[in-house]
Length: 508
Image (tube, one colour):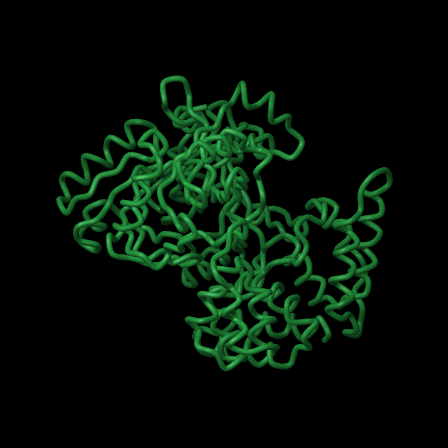
């Protein structure tokens, strides 16, 4: 199959407003794929590579992308996949030059549209609407299988690409092979967002509330003395978290799968920033050294398997009972069960005062819906806002092509100028994108590739969930999960928040 078919389909799907139309178009392409191509097609149309790490940074990719484009579409999926596979295996002296020359040769064989797609694919910027959720239903339609069976197989396999290949080549019965298995990680259950605890209680009724820790999501598997730990992305991180391994080994159970968080705590029990916790997962760091200076503590909030029995179909209240019987309170996040909004608010306030992100509200009757972002789990987090200045914007891709989308955000420096804090394209409606593009073009001062620099005259209210240290910006800080709330036509740039205000919000 030619890469051009993937590019055309991705572009078409991005421009379709309806979910059913997207599913139909994706299913059509899947049906035409050869068995050896199904995994690659599924990966690319969900915005992912089949390779884990190809060692290509943004600067290297930009240099490769300057290659002259081919006039005719001749590049196949196999060509692309083989090339990226070679990049994944490159190491040692001369590997950087090899990566650049190999990638440049690939871009030289691609048309202009294919180059743009490859750039977005490698940077993780393919956006065409509900990527994996829609693709699961497209696989189901292409294979003639109920979507619920494909969804369940995907959550148990942890890999839609493999499930797609099996469904399309072997049929519905073959999906039964995807049962819960020790040491094969399961996609984690995810949560929707509630505005506040009152809304969560109104929606769920009597529910469990748990402290929401700002740590690293982990899934721990044990069989006898063997323990392995997986990340949210289902990567094996066992070597990085010996404290988690030790804690799971101490439990009085022969086989178990636990869902939880690993977090670094200060001596007083308050949490370090998320970025500090993530230092423990760096590939080049000495774990033994970090274990002494930055110990991790695991907290487990769910149990999916115990003593050779799957538990994901059990109601949450039953899973919680089993968890409490096996895992000591010191290794579980704080928790209450209530239907009282005032009690829930008090619990939330205590969590925030202790330095945590917020709380999770969980339906007592829900099964563990792995890989799903349903309404059975709701997260309520403290949200901060800042009034920042737009310094530049980047041209969008896909359905945002032709629109200035990704905003460069800066805080006012009292000594003059602005301090960059990050970028965001989130929170922008189609109407706001249209207005924003016109306004920013009026303010444009220079263009640098896909970036348009503007006069710093627009103030925008930005919501964010925290700050983290960043070597990429002169101020040393970057926003986490930033999104646009609204433009502040009522404020001048002189009224925008200063970098001093931002620094006062950061707790290192």
